[in-house]
Picture 1 (tube, rainbow, N blue to C red):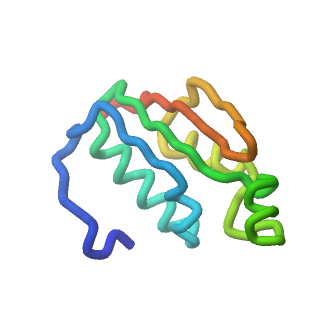
Picture 2 (picture 1 turned 60 degrees about the vertical axis):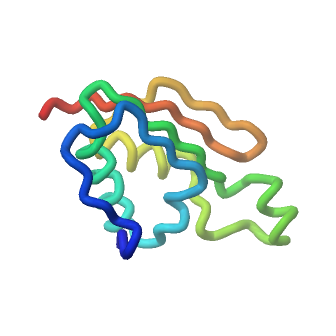
Length: 109
């Protein structure tokens, strides 16, 4: 899943991880979970994860593609995935079909 771009970062290497339009490109749910677990591993305790993802009903996606994008998920899908991986959602905004979430790493290591 991480192919040639994967780097073996140390545990708790980052204060902030920022993802923008990334997770929808990982089509397998188990691979998404692996990616979230790796982010959790390299993020410092109490560190922040920022995620921006297009949602399924984004008018920009429909306008651009002419159809509802099937790789784009509902907000509940992302929230469930995020919470199951030990993150707390601090705030959420939907700006024109793009879901933005600011998350905190709350899990104890």
